[in-house]
Amino acid sequence: MMTNWVPQIDSRSGPIYEAIADDLAEAVADGRLRAGGRLPTHRDLAHRLGVTIGTVTRAYAEAERRGIVEATVGRGTFVKAPLASAGDTREAASAIVDLRSNYPALAPSAAALTEAFSALSKDPSLVNLLRYQEHAGLLRHRTAGAQLISQPGFAVPPDRVLVTAGGQHAMLTALLTLTQPGDLVLTEELTYHGFKALAQRLKLRLHGIALDGQGLIPEAFEIACRTLAPRALYCTPSLQNPTAVIMSEERRAKIAAIAAKFSVAIIEDDIFGFLVPEQRPMSAYAEGKCCYISSVSKSLAPGLRIGFLAVPQGDTPRYAEAIRMTTWMAPPLIAEIVCRWIEDGTAERLMDAQRAENAARIRLASEHLHRFVTPTHPSASHLWMKLPAPWRADRFQQEALTAGVALTTGEAFAVGVQPPEAVRVCVGAAATREVLDNALSTIARLAASTEAASETALSIV
Image (tube, rainbow, N blue to C red; front, side):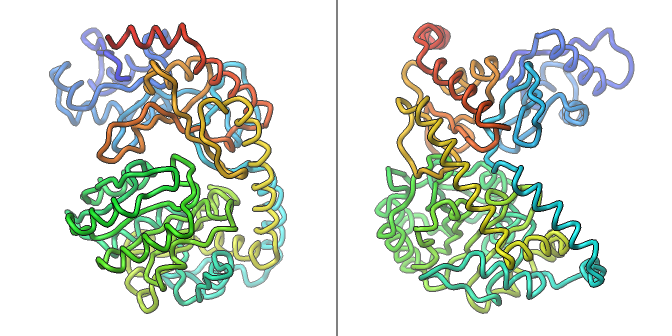
């Protein structure tokens, strides 16, 4: 919900942008602005104050530098709150439990990282990793990536694999290679907001395809292919983000066949695939014509920033050129750590631990939220919570934040559809299961609160 805050700057000295940032800080401190509140757009605030848009942009940038606000492309600028996450075990009473962030429990990887650094420090060949490398990554690292993503029915040779600086960079690499500004890209009608941000920056047009309990609907996809001439399809068949549905193998094969029929490139985001290893990727049905994205951000740790992009045979140089333009190469030193973990079995052990931890947390979530969520895979990392009437998602998000829990609404994920009255709940980011249990209990009580929901309904009449 956007605030009606207008800074009082007439009596302030110094540059106008600093005066705006100072008033913003004071408004947060004295309670005029609450954590999670969305600030006016740059254009709107500039109009209200009679200043340039550039001045407001600089003011918001200064506030972000001070840690007061956070900006998300395509969503706006929001008042920031202190967050209690998996990376911060100090649970202050005033901290917010962040169930917006979709990442794994970090303790097992932290211990393994200490051992990895110790081993690297004793390796005399370490200096070689400090040099420039091939844009696609060292062959040994690409071989490890191929080992990580390959499975029965989906074998990927190392020469089709590129090492990227995380999954987001793999998406960017794929889009830079496959599309031009103005191209139409299809997605699920609810899709990863990070992909939306990339598409906006690259001036791509997005069109959302209808979903059901098995994910992307093939018939709707075929109609869009026939009538809209799309360049590519971006989709997440395993634990779709945000709905957490899993596409059946039959449907994966249908989508791949339709894409081939209409010469539509597929960008498959399989970042959650390790949580459902029994499912073969859609790329297995596309005869090597998909761009397949995987990453260690959800399975090992997001701070490692290593992803793997499998591309069609013979196309590696084209995609490597996009890596050269954006980051030259993924960090070889970090890629070496991931490579060693894949080779010696540490990666599989950590993924097993993550699946087990997720299972325990999903059980907690099911106990609290069974009335509001559709059952998903027992090792899922997130749930899609449909809010009972008359709750509105933005108001529920604000009330949950006031109660100490941060959530993401359907608005962040919607492509061309009315955002659903729903929120995504990520189970991995809370520091401990006890913290998660308390947070889940809080949002369950809030969802069931007829008094709060009635107040919401009255506020929008």
